[in-house]
Length: 363
Ligand SMILES: *Cc1c(COP(=O)(O)O)cnc(C)c1O
Image: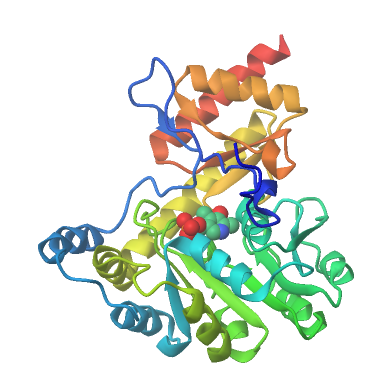
């Protein structure tokens, strides 16, 4: 072993990410409700575009993603020159941290915030600052109080994962207005499309130079396996991020599939309304069985148990039945289980089995 060969500071602080499990021994086709995937999958138009892409795999992809950026711009009414695409929004988070934060700088996020904010903060050698939430809701005053002359980035997912809660755009605007001048506010809109009439922060990012919005094709678009996300903000920020982005970060298949997906908004509207219907049903069904959840604005609910032991016992009970939900101890919510809204049979099954678990536990 050569202990002179050492990684940069921060790298060994990174805990390896553990994704939602997809297998249960003894179940050939478990029901996976652990990664907030769209149970209906992507639009047929996206699948057709992916199949067509196979014929041109000898060609290098577009480096500037102009066609995809224009499609996103058309659909959302945004200037394509202010859009940047990445291999999932994960890659955009990494560009932001790499470009704006380094040793001595601070990156702020909330207590139950997305784990990748911490990972990329450490990867950049910067210092994570974790801010308390108020009853599992983003607390703007607490974030403002945590900011300093060292704050470079502030990440807020709205709706948040794994809580499913969200705060009004007026609160986001108040946060942007109160930040120190060197800090960029990043609104992570991974679940924005699940909220009827919500623009994910696009209007704020259009108007305010210190606000940046991130979106993804992994959730409502049903394309988590494709790895495409995008960011939107001030031209100066896009210019910075383009310098750290590799020219071939997205394959032609990724670009063409995402373009077809974003143009099929009928599919997205159908998925949004089906999700809202089943989410309402499941929230109520669990409440009737003694398991409360906050009002969720996303495609999952955070089921609250009476203790960490009860949550883990319920998780094990569901798993025996081939149902995989997500433990969220890593997010500081060990007494909870995050349950993705699956299709109707999956929602009925998970509600039934949680009822069985509670009935058994009560005896
Ligand atoms: C799923 C998720 C993302 C998206 O990640 P991708 O890299 O685009 O798949 C981003 N932020 C949050 C809060 C998420 O839950």
